[in-house]
Length: 97
Image (tube, rainbow, N blue to C red; front, side, top):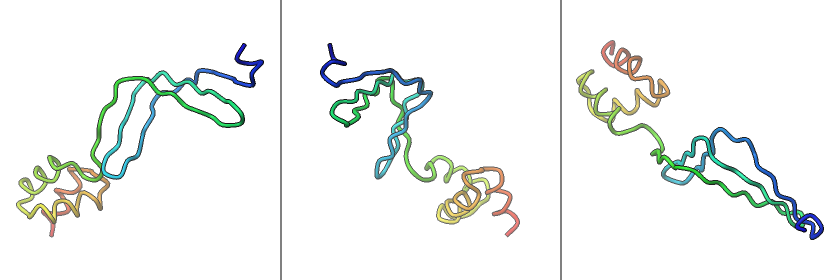
């Protein structure tokens, strides 16, 4: 009946859905995703358990690098940003300088 009204619905085989918000990310692993097309517009429905991630470098990582390399949190954060979050590389760089 919905097809006769110009509405089409199907399930998508998604592994992960990520919503990028201003200050965080919502990640849904193994979601149930459906898409409904009606009058040329698509509507997506996502269902599943969400995991919230903060944007940027996690505070715990900054604190660990700062403590391990005996530097300020600002320097630790900058090193983590430069190494794309690689803890070992950030500590190694900070200890060299």
